[in-house]
Length: 306
Image (cartoon, rainbow, N blue to C red):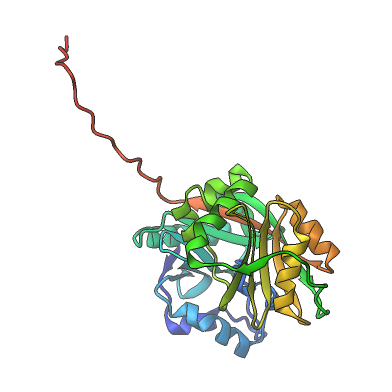
């Protein structure tokens, strides 16, 4: 019988096969993209990569008797109402392993106030159908684009400046104007939901904005580190705001995860020397329907019931 439980520190070793390799992680959170860890690793690398998850309280393993068959780990994004799957491993061809992992994880994070759970996988990942069976739905397709270590493009005359903390609402309003309704419905139907669903970037980031007539018209975020990442939103041309981000990156490799529903961004990245480095599917599931606020009403006159 297959069941899921919290792992023991030694359980991770059971995910290593006889040839000293581990099964790949099907989950692709933003802060792991571009690290080149899609392929199975040697034993010592595997232990270093997965040990922190194996000892975490938001991790579960699927077991059959004494055999470890799979592992799932989830974590909050910016706020604890929005979570994401960070690790998802199945060592078998048995779909019941996926289902036992999803079921146990969904029950566990629901007790911690989770309202939504996100999952990113490769477009051709074998877990997509199992995730659908568990109630996840695909709401966006994304392309990871990579720019090699090249000099940044010429600096434009765009009036770019650092974003103030008080301007988060302005960036959300820009997001609301530019993103399709079906994407906003799951990522950011409200300012609160949008803030909660912001992904982990894997380091300290810098936000730049362009303001026109007291309205945020363009935004970009840049993280410099082991992987240099950027994102951008614009109400018009993307070339200038992405070029501003690349000024911060300098002559280093850069990655940008661009949704296919933002073709203007994809085109700008192509013109600026980015090349496709991976295709992904963003999935999500709502765990709790937000309660509507009740407005008390007073009866003006008595109503007789027959």
